[in-house]
Length: 379
Image 1 (spheres, helix red, strand yellow):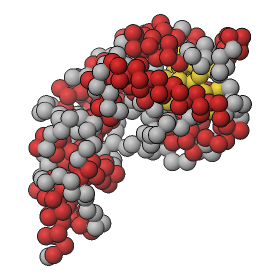
Image 2 (cartoon, rainbow, N blue to C red):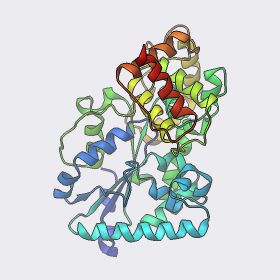
Image 3 (cartoon, rainbow, N blue to C red):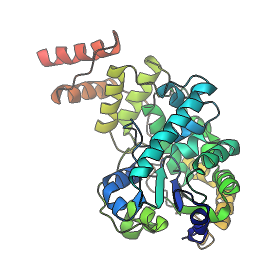
């Protein structure tokens, strides 16, 4: 393990933990599955003097409280709105409150010498070095030794999965071409920049880079791979397929919903809309390919030079190319983007058969949905 030779620093300095394992994603590399694995095994980890903390007063699994505490302008994002942080003074107070609550929890687990933190928001929200530096400064009150665990996924696969995530988060995708939508977020594919930024702030020896590739995982298990990377004990593994992508019906419905009923991305104040999105996300999981095989290959090939650079930096033990280059899952032609009348009827029928209803705190969406379902049940 790359960081074990650093552990003496925290012991000698008298800091609370010998090591902090910081799992930063990236997004769409099974972070929810890893967080679920850690939550299910929290007590077993404690028995091995490893703490995966519960966030104070929150059911959110992605620990975005840390991002809200160190981000320079959290009030400009959904994280700040969620925690009602509207200015710098409130951010400082939030940070102090978080530190106090965490310290009390750490004191209750006095034997634990390793702390694990996991959040895909570390990668996606702390996107420039000053923000990464702020996180290190904040966490340094508890340890001087860090292990940064980061997973990298082939760019075209990440791009498709991230389209589904954007729709679930109520982002309006206006582009007619899905390739245009994919190309609109280039920083998500800048793996070398990400690696260098975190290396600059935490040190190259602190970075543990892994590939999001089932063929490279022990027993084809992401949780097992994460455990091996962190030196964790052998722990039970349950369902690893969480936060799945949308199939064609789910993708197109949420795309149309976001266009016709737009809200601030991440806003969940409309309970009817939130319930509808959660239902669609769960009911219509699967694969959808709005780009063709040739488009996927072309997009991926545009990162060939960068991926080779990443291989030399983070994966020198692997031969080139870094990622598997099988594109057979893609169709020759992109699947169509239209949401047909039959698709809408099928969706409403599914909700009717499952007797789904939605909270009506919205005078428009919630009441309309329940009205449609009532009419269907009355027939």
